[in-house]
Image 1 (cartoon, helix red, strand yellow):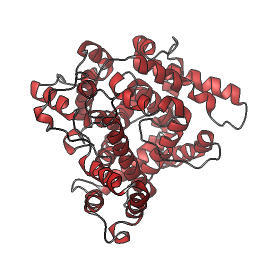
Image 2 (tube, helix red, strand yellow; image 1 turned 135 degrees about the vertical axis):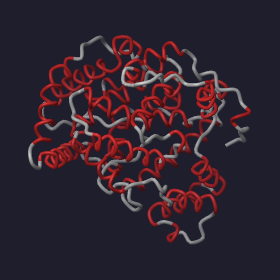
Image 3 (tube, helix red, strand yellow; image 1 turned 90 degrees about the horizontal axis):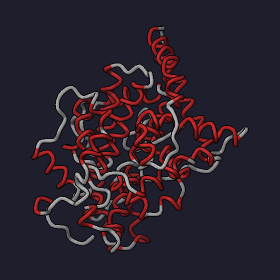
Length: 411
């Protein structure tokens, strides 16, 4: 990667706050859930602009080393270090050794009990938790035109939404398993692979003539990584509440803690991570306002994701199930992006009929289980089983792969 001056010496990329009025409209739903004035101070606004120039130094150093020694020689060492730690690579070169030591040194604030609470709450949301994360997180996120540029330039449209979403769902399942972030668990190791993959993409795009640095800043930068992390945490919590899932204070604290640690493992700077849900909502609001407005990539990616349910591997009546799921996802997306958002994403007009029909029954179901002895534990078991049982519909018997978590899991 060619040398980049210190971010504080650069003007923010032109994408930064390109149209705050549109950003505020996109963030209006989040604004309703924030107690105080969430607008960024001049210092906060400038800090967001500077973060658009920053990538992920530990992972970027590993990728530079890989390019120096060649992928054929370097990739096996990287894989051995991810799988077995530095004991498996006793003579690891400095960039690789520094990266592994960094990720293996847990921050002092990580709390095992809260990680468990967060994982169990995610399990209790079942397949609906997967569905709403896809539509309130991924589909809504495609409105941010600048973030989409990396996806489009790396061939996301040609690769297909169904495969990308399926692979990311596999990562999400591993990472949110109980103990999924233990050092040698599949979730931890896959997260490291995804982080390095991000760095590979970052280096590739940064050195392409087609990448407009003055407009877009650094590919897969800290602001856009924060947006992804907030989609999996604060956005997911808000959307579940809106759709009738009961969320206790312990659930919310566990969820935010789990994703704070996962965000850190993915390379998001600690200053952009939040344990407190209200603070995370403020950060989300400011992030959305700073994003570039929807553009043609929003429509291309939105329409591709709209048709993704048609390509799943249903065991019976695939045509009927595909069309029903397509309509269901569109109705959930309509609830969270509104009429303007649907148009910006190139989606057909519809109504939020599915949330309207199911929110009260879902609220009753979750409330009842929380009142009954052992009910919450049953929600956790049943929910996780339903999540696991849906993986064959996404993969059709193929082995899960690894993809950057730009796509939220879905049902």
